[in-house]
Amino acid sequence: MKPFISSLKYPLAVVFWLIVWHVASEIIANTIIIVSPIAAFARLFELALEAHFWTAIGASLMRIVSGFLLAMVVGVAMAATTSSVRFLYALTLPVFNIIKSIPVASFIILAWMWMDSQNLSAFIAFITVLPIVYFNTYEGIKGTDEGLLQMARVFKVPARKKMAYIYFPATAPHIIAAASSGLGFAFKSGIAAELIGLARDTIGFNLHTARIFLQTADVFAWTIAIVLLSYVIEKVFVLLMKGLKNNVRT
Amino acid sequence: MLELRHIYKSFGEKIVFTNLNLDFPEGKFTAVMGPSGCGKTTLINLILGILTPEHGEIVGFGGRKVAAVFQEDRLLEHKSGLENVLFVLRDEAKGRDVAEKLLERAELAQDAHKKAKEYSGGMRRRLALCRALVTDFDLLILDEPFKGMDAALKPRIMEMVKEKCAGKTVLLITHDRDEADFFDGDVVDISNLPMR
View (cartoon, rainbow over the protein chains, first blue to last red):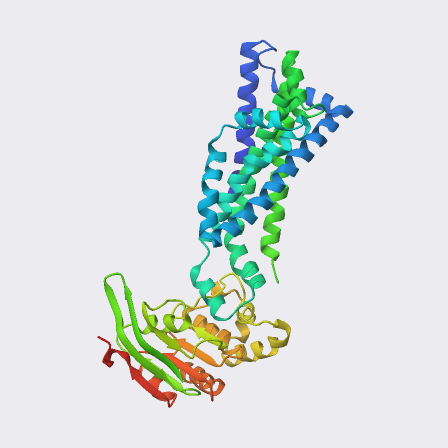
């Protein structure tokens, strides 16, 4: 019985905050400032019946996920390279620290001047996620059990086996953690880039339009869509990574 | 002949060897003894290339097929006993039979598919021994390999090691004089060597 009650905690918390939102919308009673959750979800269902909604979802998803996946590949590869060459680590560290501390808005504006606004969200998702993946993976590699690595060196174990049996199990939790937080950042920054760059037929562009016409219900509906999308993609990706970790075998 | 010549090794303020000279005969057992902290494991780590001496040279260790049982078991905790043994083989399919026979001989056949993290201390030592013995080594380094082993089982495991290492060069680190004598090789007490 206890696990059942425990499993209800999270959904009950969600319901509680939906009620708070509803009460707040009733008290404020101004649909330009805030709409009720019922109105927001109703608008989301209406939008979901329109083709342009799915076009925007598809376009944003494709670009943001592309940027995210590229950051995963480049971040892991760079961490693997720089962890074994101290000079390269020293060389790249300031670059990653600068990228990490520059506000996303500055990046969006700069990148907007350099490239086509349609590709802006992919680039921004990439640049936002890259340091997260890099630092997490680097930490995982550096934390790999030195005793096991020495053992593998003594027995002259091939590199591919060392990767699969020693490095990957040690770094996978760090990569999963990076992917999990990175996806959220990718969506937030990518959609901000679409909004600032006014990339047509994207979620960001639709948010911009809703803002211009004071369509608050649309803003809420699109935001709910982003949250759901980000949640589903994160779960799928983390599940894939965990499956890979459990089944890894040379 | 494997030779250590004029080895100097220190860890900060702590000097372990100032002028260590040692020869290990080929194809024989050499037991290295000495009290705790006299540098037995440092010696092993120097030979294995895990540590580098500040001065001196180690001759005759390059290009060898080395196997080792470390003081810590250094097992892949989330892999099974069998997978741990197969890990050190280049051709797992070819070596699988040998690995299984070794595990059987070490009385680990029943637990071969259990994860290493589920093994007891003594079982872990036996597994680490199987992992070393499965390879086609010409130099075997054993750092207290029988530590924590069940008293009834230990003689059978020692017999297995003796049999599998016949004609090979083996360095055995031990505190136990009986263990050293069992293998009929040279016995070196490094605490008595003139190295300071």
